[in-house]
Length: 238
Ligand SMILES: [Fe+2]
Ligand SMILES: [Fe+2]
Image 1 (tube, rainbow, N blue to C red):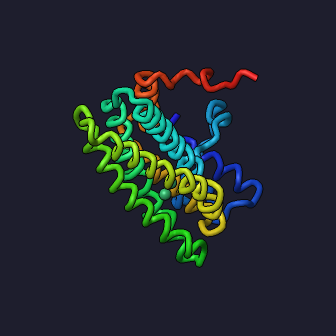
Image 2: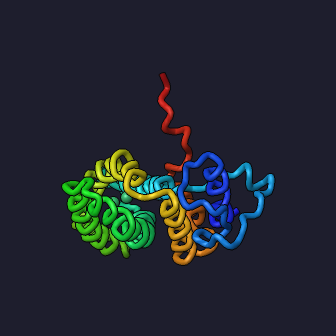
Image 3: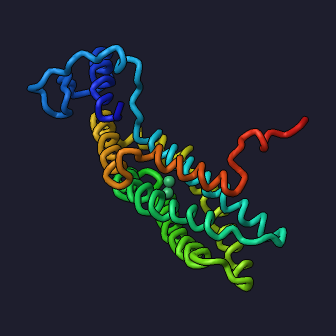
């Protein structure tokens, strides 16, 4: 079930507990003329993806590319061949899914609301600057891996991936723990739900019916190529 179809449920539930304002129990948000149909048993078991959850799982995509980069760095440092194709594919996901989608959502819908409310006014400009620096690093990584990486470019490639990891680990951790939780303080519940729908529409407009799931499938393929997909290999023997 698409998130759009689930959105009526929390509105209906929340109205019963007076959590949300403006409850017309509407199917289409803001249209009080149309009563909300009772959720089917299947709907009643589904919980909608909220904007912070949506953004956080996109961070999971980012984190998995960081792991791909880390494997690239490990091989370069070990003197092994550069896995240019998988690294290029990972950087491509950063460009299309993180930079052109996820960060656009943050810059268009999240950061301005926080700044307008006087929240995190020191942090937001740093996050935006990091988005800009990240795009520079991604361009370099894409260029260097577009074809078999020349011997003399190995060190620069490793340095660019390392700089990307070093910046984005604290970047996404700060967003997950401070920025996204603050959204609930400044965005009214009704707009919160509308934002979820906006994110959903944008996701499918850009990435087709498979959306997020399709991107996760691409990540899994890259990880399999690099031999880092099997989760159990990371379990320590203690
Ligand atoms: Fe960000
Ligand atoms: Fe982010």
